[in-house]
Image (cartoon, rainbow over all chains, first blue to last red; front, side, top):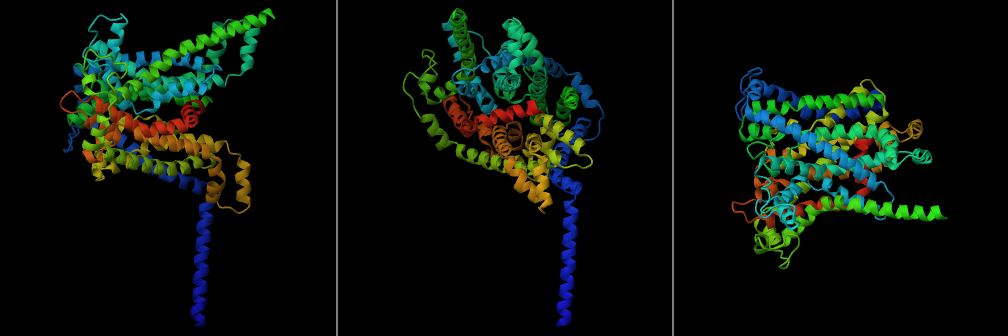
Length: 312
Length: 286
């Protein structure tokens, strides 16, 4: 009995010691730090880094849905570059991104300047302006689709009544130039709030004294904007433009819902073409190769972002 | 005196100028929603008549399209799926990113900087780059065509964003408070849970709101990984399944779009300021 209880005690003490040691080990800053990161690390490694590696592997093989293919080197890339539809997509992507981004930046700064003023109902105005960013894009694009309907378009109806269009007005989604204009309009509509609200946050952080000093010096409203606002806004503006470049360039929802890349592929972007070739067509190898063409753009943006952050 | 009067006049004019300029923006932002809502209440006869005025409801509002949605489609199932997916994915992401965000913002160990950079780069990787390989990964995991495919993959874009956001909040907490707790014998986990976490509540609210909104609104993964009607999310269900063969579907389609937006709009109306701060944190703090 006595021996038994002593043995128990010792075992208990040893157990306690092990527990205390484990605790001590866990309490070390670096162990605790690595421990906390572990779940995020596993997630990113398994579901971001690994799939990314797979995308590269797919692009170098003739992988079809359901049949792992063999290594074909740069065959997919060569085939894609020779493809008329792909070249059209590259052109579309740059036109789409350049126009949408310029419109968002110009209108966004203008809107932010207006919102920054001390107006009555400021909060309500901001709330209203931000709304397009919150609503599910795929659903609001459905609304736009109906607004651009070939027969019952409210845009055409209104423009015709106002004398801006001759009846019946353009078939928005059926003609390539108009379809591109429609897709860009929806993208600007959806992305403008992000620009405006972020630039607004940048504007608010500019000290009032700068403006007062400029006013004392007799600077006009435009001069104040040009020599005070714009230079101080530059860091925020740079970040917003870089962010928006990625998300505009990689847009999928708007084009998929509004035009499916049509008419005759004139609104296809990399993401929608990759979806069509890789999933609907089942050619995962080529689909992956197409989506990897988004990478150089992404790399460029990441590079600028990191350089910028390091400077901070 | 004279200058005072003049400046008041100028100020009045400039205020009128600001409102006048804001008007087109507000109209541009809100008109599509207005049009979606009135479309969902119009009768088919009115919707598809070239003689009616499309800008408002002329022949009385009807709820037929909504009745159709609830009675003859899987709309309620889609809403339920979306709720389960959004809540679960957001909860998982929140736990993971609180841990990672605290570690990256507060603790010193080798590699902390490069891991922070990795999180940031992941934050910039768009889902459109990964959907093809991920569609194969969910097949291998045996969760393709179930809501689990989305619960598992949504944290891939939520965690980087949330971690980045929370790092900013954890950094603002004075280090001394935590050191005091440690000296008083609290374990590191207790310090995190009892000291740091309560002080980062605004950040956590932000993460929950954005997590819910981003997962609810997500489209490409939901479209790609799930094809069975009863497992679809609200967004994909409305976008893909409500479009029937004939052309007379706009009423119910808009009704579905309006109703499926309600949860996020409700969050948005109540927590507007959090949305603004979360939206700007990514860019301004980054």
